[in-house]
Amino acid sequence: SSIFEDHLGYIWIGSQAGLYKFDGYKTIHYAYDPTQPDKIAGNWIQDITEDDEGNIWFGVFGIGLQKLNPSTGKFTLYKDKFFGKTSFEKIYNLLFIKKNIYMATTDFCIFSTETEKIKYFPEIQSPIIFEINGLVWTLSRDNTLYYFDEKKDSLVQYSNLGIKSDLIITPVVVQDKIYINDVLGNFYSYDYKSKKLNFLNSPNNKAFIQRMLMIDNRQIYIIGEKSFEIYDIKKNTFS
Image (cartoon, rainbow, N blue to C red):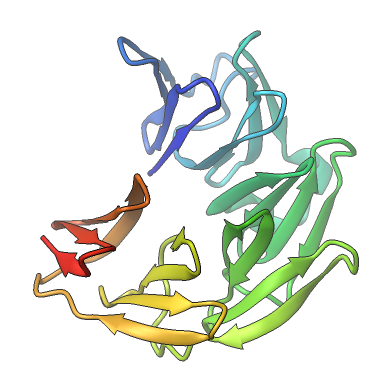
């Protein structure tokens, strides 16, 4: 599942039952209907982002990338143009910056919203994508940190975090630190300027971690399959 707030303050929720829009009062549900091929292409919605024209973009598992114009209600599916690229059908993470949508699929990909062309970086396997001060960063399966150099149009290796287990969710960035959960439920902070990793020992027994949410740059909500806890950044405490 995924949660995204657009520039108007509307909340978009992706689930395995379709796409939802919440305006604070009522909810609109976009669900797949095989009799309406020009609408939403499937019900399993993965990550969500928004471009600078207010269009909502999201991944439909097993299908491809889809765009919704909220003003007109028009859906556009991007699939057939990239036939043969099966990784395009498994979009786990989306990030829009400067006319490009950076995508984490089985590879690292960049989709231009202007030209509708896509570029693959297969050397980065199962990446996690996030932003720091307008710069796109990605963590690979082996926990190596890269950033994308726009001038060189390439990924530049920055450092390896030194975490032995796999990462599973998008990190949270606060000032100079990247907050990370791994597949075992371990919680870390990584200072990307000094390249120092710090293990944050939580007293709570966490199960499979599904998502982290930043609240007012003060707290991180850590949401697990059967757990929920709050990390206070300033106090360095869990509750």
